[in-house]
Image (tube, rainbow, N blue to C red; front, side, top):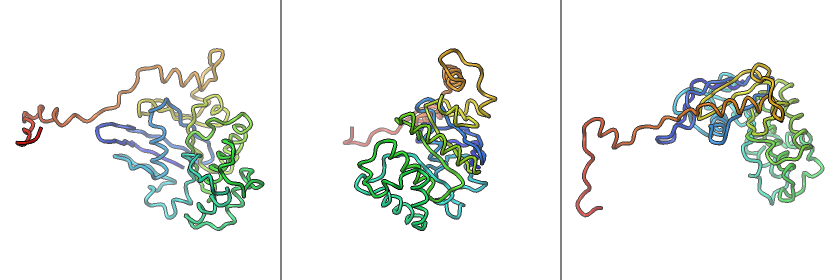
Length: 265
């Protein structure tokens, strides 16, 4: 299970996410939705150990990332399907990943079989279609057979056949007891995949719960999740708080800014 409790991330004076609290349980697919800039990628990077929270806690099965005995084997991550070297074969790419986290080569073959790439395992990644690259990225995410899987926009740019395959794969992983958390802008598709939804807007959680509890009958031409999304994102936009500028602090305390040194402009 993934759990975030009162998590805030600041970059200088900008608050990227603020007071974010939610759970992604084991055995379920949790969908993370929200407009661009809502904080979805920051949230996923926090869970993957690539960002540090300014305050609050992020835990995987009750442990902070730094406390996990083998985080590379506990969390499978897909944040960018295009990062594999085009000159490497699919097998070479996965072997390199396996060596980095101390896995045997047998896991490479198992992952290739899972995503249906065994027949092209020795072909250069540069010859792969977008759908095949996405399958390879998912193979990397499940390489260690992790209990927690985190994916950022795994179906972007894919054709209907590839999307249906990813949907079935994610459902099978969750049904086998794994925690699956993914972000997606394809809301009608996510509605067919997710058990629960967390909606972010302006860096804050604006809705969360089981999909069946959140969606309502939608207007013609929209899915229930699309209707929920538009209702949430057309409401008042939460304003991210910014730290006061240093000069504003000085003015507030009645101190004048220092004068430039002689010879400087």
